[in-house]
Length: 240
Image (cartoon, rainbow, N blue to C red; front, side):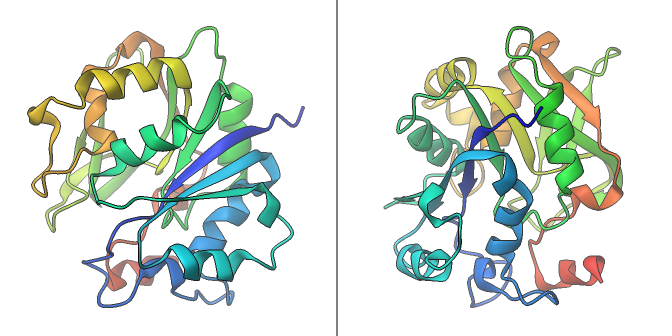
């Protein structure tokens, strides 16, 4: 069965580690931009795609995607202040009445269509708050901490720094969740300064410190490339 859900793509970052250009518009070897490449992975399973953008890339993104067949599916939102991914996702959730959402980072170029479909099919809204595909990695920006039942206890996050974990279970930059549970969690913790990163932004990944771990399920992705995202231009070497 081909289930369809609403996806959120946070793409309002300033790409500071990538260089002077916005990485969303960087063209890969397949001639598609990073943003187009990511949308292609989820479009088949989407009712709607909500893209969160900043003042600079809002109009260029609309122009880039205007001739795509899926353009009518896309809702473009502008984040006037860079407050972090948790705020961006919360703002997107406010615009839709859907119950189940997927989030994918705009630069998650390694994510496979198989992992997207498998995760959606696996998700059971009656039993789960959130499902997180993971895979083992060396030199990763995030490390998913699991309990003995492979439930997600926490995600330790260094994605906004130049430091990495030597090894660990890296998330795939892709999450499916129950809106009511995650929306409440974001609002509950939005004034918790302990969840701020070094840029004084609220990261979505930092919310995993306060999830009900028994309802937060991890699954092992079947493709190691699923974890590949683009933070710096050096990361492009990994996808060759």
